[in-house]
Each structure stands twice: as structure tokens, then as C-alpha cells.
Length: 180
Ligand SMILES: Nc1nc2c(ncn2[C@@H]2O[C@H](COP(=O)(O)OP(=O)(O)O)[C@@H](O)[C@H]2O)c(=O)[nH]1
Ligand SMILES: [Mg+2]
Image (cartoon, rainbow, N blue to C red; front, side):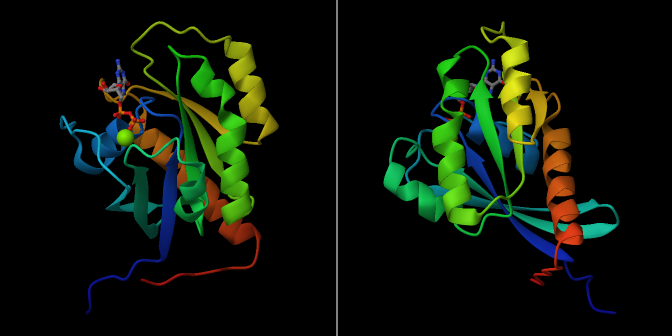
């Protein structure tokens, strides 16, 4: 028997301002550790295989390497994404307020794909109004999850939510199976 093929390949992109914790969340999920990396240039791709709903999913996870402020690269970065995390830092309210610029770029490049709102750094005090956070996530029909990359809280669950939403979308619409 040949090795089991992936049922699906999903491109997952991390959106959000510099310093919110995108790289830390990626590192935690993919490698189960945090390394002290310097700021890197361009986008970095990581691959993770995960079984969800009896389906073998190959996740190609894109992490921005310190180019968050370059609007012109957002479209290429988001192009053909299957789903996205919008990450904000609960200690800096402006990182939530910027959701529109990120989601507009995503929808323009990838269509209306699932998004999970990630309130990161829950090990720290919040400066956000929790009702406002819920309202914004709901207005995008998105699930909200609170994480800590440093304390490894809910990181796996965030990915599970997103992959489940992607799979639900695939099954509800025309089936677009991408075999690897
Ligand atoms: N306290 C705390 N710090 C975090 C958390 N996630 C990331 N950080 C810190 O926030 C800073 C920026 O994280 P990084 O992953 O580089 O953010 P990025 O620019 O969005 O990729 C680093 O100093 C991280 O150690 C978290 O959950 N809690
Ligand atoms: Mg980063």
C-alpha cells in the first residue's frame, strides 16, 4: 500500500499587525516550541499535517516576515488562501481596529474564505472591550478564539476551528478537492 495521500491541501495565511504574535503562534503549532527568531524578510511557509473529521489535511501555513506594512504585498500573500487567521494583540487595541485593512485585502485576493479571529496574549491584561471584540468577529461571521502562544493556550484549537470551517465550506459548496 502506498502511503496515504492527503485528502486536502489548505493554504492558511496569518494576518495582523507586526508584533501581535503571528510567528509565535505558527512556531507553537508547527514545532511545539518557540524559537527566538529575528525579524525575517518575505513570507515563510510551514507545512503541517493534521487529521480532522477523518480527513488528512496538509496545511501550508504562510507567515509574514516583517512586511506587514507593505500593502502591495498583501494581495500576493493572500492569493488563493483557503482560510485565514486575523490575529490581534489584546494589549494594543489598534491591532484590532485594523481588521478592515487586513480582511479587505484577503477578500479581494482570495474571495470570502473563512476567517478565525485570534485574540492573542491572553496571559496579559486586556485593553479591549470584550463586547466589541465579539461584535466585530460576528460581523464577519467568524469564530473568535483567545490564545497565548507563550503559554500554549488554545493554539491547536484555533487551527482546528479554521480547518473545520474550511472543510465545511468545501462540503457545502462545490467540492474542490486539491490532491497533493
Ligand atoms: N505575553 C505574550 N507574548 C507573546 C505572545 N505571543 C507572542 N508574544 C510576544 O510578542 C512579540 C511579537 O511576537 P511575534 O510572534 O514576533 O509577532 P508577529 O510580528 O505578529 O509575528 C514577541 O516578543 C513574542 O514573544 C503571547 O501569547 N503572550
Ligand atoms: Mg512575524
